[in-house]
Image (cartoon, rainbow, N blue to C red):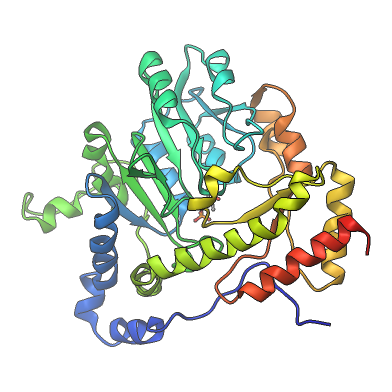
Length: 378
Ligand SMILES: *Cc1c(COP(=O)(O)O)cnc(C)c1O
């Protein structure tokens, strides 16, 4: 049998250990957050108009938004249910109620046609989750937010490197976030980025980021000492993570290109199965910017279970994704859901294939051949 093909992997790109040693032996560099600053300088080239905060996780960036939006008990936040728990929990932890809206089977993003039905007097914001790194029609979503005076938040956790028209995802809504978790395309092992794109939310963020103190104003010599001025927490990224992230950011072009090449091989290998009605792939227009994951949609839950078992027997690790939040124990009690059953159906039929930098063209061909063997009879 061929060597097993894991779903994900981790491998040093080059200078991570060297970077870590540099800060572990130089207190001045550590204190001035040398690698965080280097990372921010690189990130600025992607997001020149946003205020950027490197955080300990994508989850932390979402929590900063919740504090910065001044959520009150009972405020409603509209979001898809087919997403990671943090999308909801960050806001729920500060008193909000999640209002889940079904996804569109076309792009697995929130269904724009169902949103207006879910808006009430209490609605405060809409969270667009760019599933697999692809956004919905953000122009249309922006119009809805403007019409009802709602805050537009981008959960771009999976979307680093992706664009809507000419702007990078994360920089388009009022606020956005990106995850640098090891499960995402660009990794700090654990980390995240908050993007504040609207002046109104920028004023408090600096203090929220520094545990609710005006430390940054003190450092800029605007106040004689720093003190407790707001809510907040220790949201900053750890410098050791920043040392890893810096190496990833310096190699971003090559990393995204590699992952996109793997996606294109999967697509070319499997499109025949789609044409014959066996399974469904991502929309072709998404292929050019597909960096995060490569999924297939089977017809039924039973078929997905059989396919993933078949692949597992061949040493291939393929994973399904979210349990819909509105059907989870906590979400059932604390949220409401609008729409049909697309979220549930997708959660039953989506299977993610191996995708990481150690995979070569021949590995993708091998995985694809096994999928073909499953459908065409072994
Ligand atoms: C990964 C992810 C998050 C959370 O990011 P962390 O860095 O893991 O905290 C939030 N939302 C979505 C859609 C994600 O995929």
